Image (cartoon, rainbow, N blue to C red; front, top):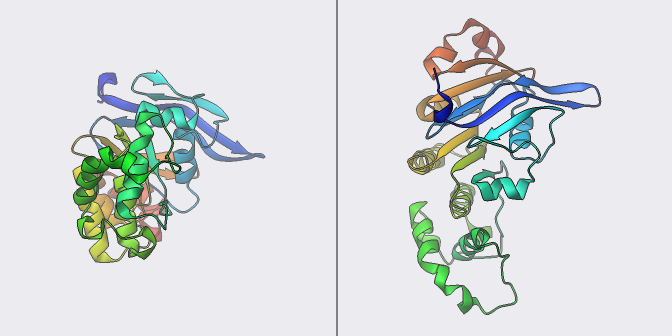
Length: 253
């Protein structure tokens, strides 16, 4: 039984309706501190809607969200990020014509409460270089530090996105389909990055690749029709007959 002190994120009756259609209904999610927690389910199960609710890109129709013991149900997205819960998106979001280093330096300014100083000399950001270079090396992009992001292969763009997300120093990292569009070699690289990132933070991810989910996740929550169907380890949820019928047998996440 998970005790309250072990939880970093919890939802109570989380619900979202769109013009009469209920996309998420009465979701009671519990995420343990320090865990890699996967959110899976058939297409249309409500996974992305849950992510949008958690990160405040959508307001809930009903229910409550608690992060680190604090009610964040009505907190704005930028303030949730400042509290330590940061989301990376399914589509790589980097500045294409900036170098790898400069992309990370932009992100490093966010915790300082300032926006990127486009009008100031580049030398004014040199103090951020050591940490930027450390993050670039950590995600395996050291050889590409001066390369414009637009010239990176897709898998390396995803690695850069993780570096920019880690630059915000989140306590909890939400990843929306981190393996989408990646080849097998890149999947291995990004899996290693996620595991390394989780050494000092909590990770909640939506992921379609079941082998990745099985390899990385401590806990899995299965959604179907906007509701939680099952939760547990991969062995537990994959052995659940209802899960096998609703999800595993479909071949889709």
